[in-house]
Amino acid sequence: MSRNFKKVIAIDGPAGSGKSTVAERLADELSTLYIDTGAMYRAVTFKALNENIDFDDKKSIEKLVDDIDISLEKTEQGLKVLLNGNDVTKKLRSSKVNKNISRIAKNKIVRKKMVQMQRQFGAKGAIVEGRDIGTVVFKKAYKKFYLDAHLDERIKRRLKQAKSKGRRVDEKTIKEEVINRDRSDRSRKIGPLRISPDSIYIDTTNLSIDEVVNKILNFIKNE
Ligand code: DC
Image: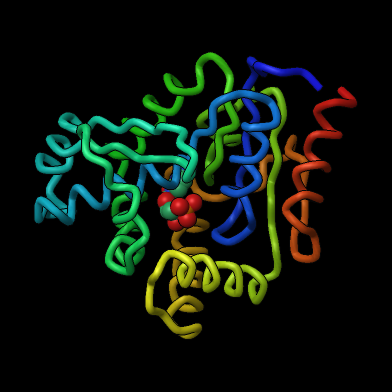
């Protein structure tokens, strides 16, 4: 298997489809960068909430994205997210961020800036994971994958993930969050979640992480 992979692999799909874990593992296998674009939208949302920004005020949003500096660092504990130099990794998965993220993710000014940053980050090759990677950010990606799973399984995974991160949440709350996010991810006008016609669709409902990673590696290897 090739190492120091220099091309872009796009992975899109809804919340809980297994994208993040799979993308991180693939980046390790191929010795390339892992770009979690969801973490970037989460960081913008966190900053907007922290600074009490009016989400509907164009000028405030412009200032927010002008001043923003996001970097993603690989660590032994997983991806570290730095927002203007501060480690905010542990603050990005709160209910407050989850509840407000769709208002930030649908903003044209925010998306323009995020797409620009993501293209810069991935310019030398990367595993890029999100909602609009194959359809907007890297339309010419070397390979595109769309990961999916049944709703119940996605809720189960998100609940497990939230609990492992110390969030005290119940299934009902997680179910609402996933359903609401699915709706807003699919219905926003700019960069909605869509299956790119040239992507490879993988239903991960009954697959382990290893199985998904190996499936993807086989597609790359057999090219
Ligand atoms: O992958 P995630 O659950 O961390 O993403 C959080 C939210 O960020 C998701 O509901 C919508 C937004 N997002 C987006 O709009 N575009 C992307 N490329 C990635 C995430």
